[in-house]
Image (tube, rainbow, N blue to C red):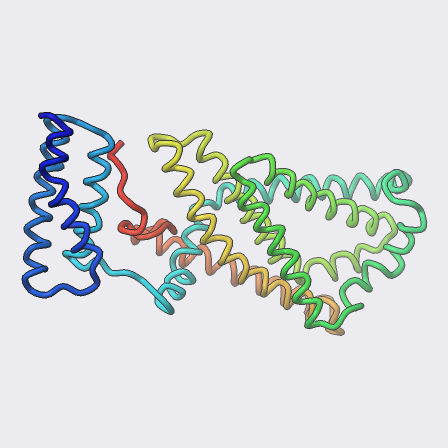
Length: 330
């Protein structure tokens, strides 16, 4: 079969099917024509695949049939508030749950390095002065660390920490395609926590350190670890795509990273509110840490319960089939 002749003979039918599939409303005659053309083009695709395999033409007809099938059978599209509800109840928790191994590994590595730095600096407080001048260390220990959480109005401070943390999470997510970018962002965060923690512990201020860090830090750091884990998985998708073509594997990972970015913005908003209104409050230390622990447990329960349920129902956190485009079988 001559492919060029075949295209010339049937291109008008394909164009007509594309026009009908793109219309939002069809009358009875047009609906019948759509079904008839869908069957004809399905036959054309079968002929191409069996008699003259041509990847470009096969992909073109597959995409056309995918759109026509959606128009014919009425594939449900989720829009507006329904899309938001699905994102909160299905897509985001599924995305986080599917990548939990990456996030847990990232958390263990980061917490391990930060803890090692804290313990080493506590045991060798003289080494701190190689990083910070003596007056800066004294200022940090005496008042800067504590004043940081209360020197600005709570509302302004909440907006500041939310936007700052959201930027860090977004960088960890979308620099994941380079792998190095996410590792750099994670390393900066890890070193900052380890350095400040080591200085405070070395000065005997452990109660102040954990009393001010844990209320919001549990949820905030969890969000950073999730973003870094998903970012690293995105980068790994083009290094080891498995059976999928690299472009397809990277596209799927990138789309789910976008879903994660939107969900993590909400998580970081909650942690920002806790940091601004709970961390510097006059509540007892146990009460402030308790509020942070409740928020963390609620987040983990939300991800595990809804993520596992969504995964069992076949959700992946990606776009719906008809919104992704058509791919050749591999």
